[in-house]
Amino acid sequence: MSQHAALQAHFTPLDGTAPQPAPGRHVLGTVAFGERTALSLTGQGYPELAIPMASPGFDSFREVWTTGAEPVTGTRGGLAFAHDGEYLFISGAIEPLPVYGPTVREVYEEAFALVGELGYPHIFRMWNFVGGIISPNAEGMEIYQDFVAGRAEAFASYGDGTGHMPAATGIGTRGEGISFTLLACREGSPRHVENQRQTPAYHYPEQYGPKPPSFARATRLHPAGGEQGDGALFVSGTASILGHETVHRGDIAAQTDVVLENIAELISGPNLAAAGLDGGHELKDLRLVKVYVRHEADLPVVRERCQAAFGPDTEVMYMNVAVCRDDLLVEIEGLVP
Ligand code: 3HB
Image 1 (tube, rainbow, N blue to C red):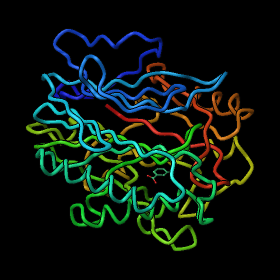
Image 2 (cartoon, protein in one colour; image 1 turned 60 degrees about the vertical axis):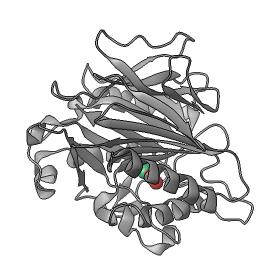
Image 3 (cartoon, helix red, strand yellow; image 1 turned 90 degrees about the horizontal axis):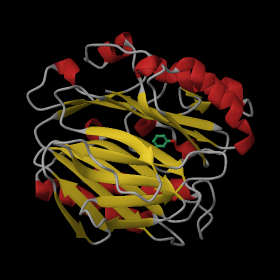
Image 4 (cartoon, helix red, strand yellow; image 1 turned 180 degrees about the vertical axis):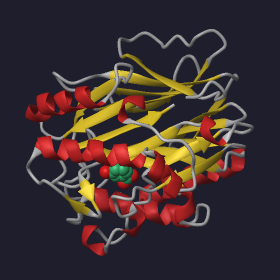
């Protein structure tokens, strides 16, 4: 993130040792992409969400969010949180259920209520980890659609609708149950960005499910007191979708190229200008990239294309999990600091 921003993130190995923040930095929260499923306040006080996303040949790692101020931490219901006066980190976990919608609605509403109560009204990034994402629930509905419906109901009572939907990822895991992490701020102002190549997800037609997914393609965080271009640009999970349709079914190389082109367009000057934002970026500016690959055997092709597209300073982690449509083979997210 920019030198003005107090919020930063990095990846560390998942080797059992606690992350050591740099002098003057404090851990706000972590996400462990490993073998376990758990949500807890660690011995050091901050929340850690553990998600089963690791597998042989792919990466396991911890994502560590740090700030410049000492955080206050706590738990409430199924939520664990930490906040530092400007940034709030919340993680939540829902155990495996036959049907998720009503519980997703309840737990996300709890999280949105906490955002309000603690005084961090602007959610700027969410990650949703959905076990069995394209499997049916006990009523035969795809679990992703079940999840999306519950989340949409929760979002209906948060803010005033589309303008407040943050950048997000909605991705499969190698376990069961649903968990999430959100980041919100007090004084800063997030600006949500759509992609001129893609239909806004919240306007998807009904063929994909009864409710459209509640997220923006990207969010730029304008930190309190900063200049417009100071804030990080958070890029949502991006797939091989043009308009609202999956393109290049069954062709991993072509899907990866479309994903990279979609992100390149999303973060480009002209696309940001269409959202009223200044600046413009290239793929090599991305950091903290996560690449979700549906089929294990596709990893070499995806890796080769990503290595060619990203810069030498781009950290890239690969995971072998399902994506939210059964014809999507790869999804990529990241941020521009
Ligand atoms: C979501 O439903 O939050 C979501 C799903 C995706 C990509 C990004 C966000 O496949």
